Image 1 (cartoon, rainbow, N blue to C red):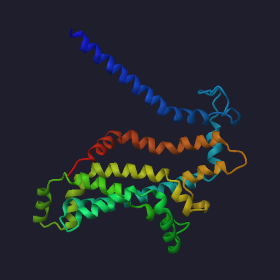
Image 2: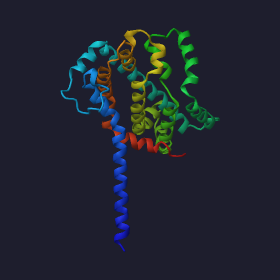
Image 3: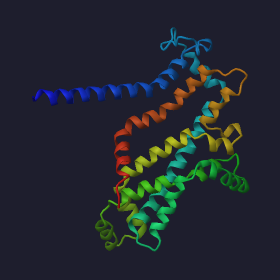
Length: 279
């Protein structure tokens, strides 16, 4: 009798493993196709049946794709914009989350709900008025136009607020008694204790900014200010789309995000799970 339930558990685990394996293969198949395509000649990109392992591999596609357009400049632009947006978002979200979590003031819950309500607005609703403001400020084709309008978001405020709710009030009170001002209490006590959430927010902001296409496409038409996603679009502006070179640059552009995720994936998953802790 004991073998029955044990055998059922083993079958359930085996089935779960197979389903997880199938899901992983389905998720990784597009990446595999991208890498395979980046090593093929153009006339074999859409050949059937699909050759997953090109022979011989055309590694010169990477050099040709890099030299076709100014991708060195595009990568520098993406790096500058991503760093600036990440730093500003961490700064604004940290201060806003701290004030909503640790200060008691009239309308605090209403303010928090108002911030959360912006998550329900699709980007199309905000795009036109934001573009008109940027246009009136003369920020088109500038780094300010790429950075400032996306330098803060409601999710960052929510994440930092939920994490800071768990900070002991006694530590903050002790810092104030010792003579630390409000800003000093935040910088010396609250912020160091909240670095896991801050790291998670920074990784998510970096990923979103690095991959952003719609907003940079609206505010930039100067080639010197193009980011990597805008540079990738140029492969399809020619009479013949060189998909093998497009996939080659896409693989290179994926590397920074892949390295960051591999380094911090455990912390990222843990903090996202804790973001739902209730007050």
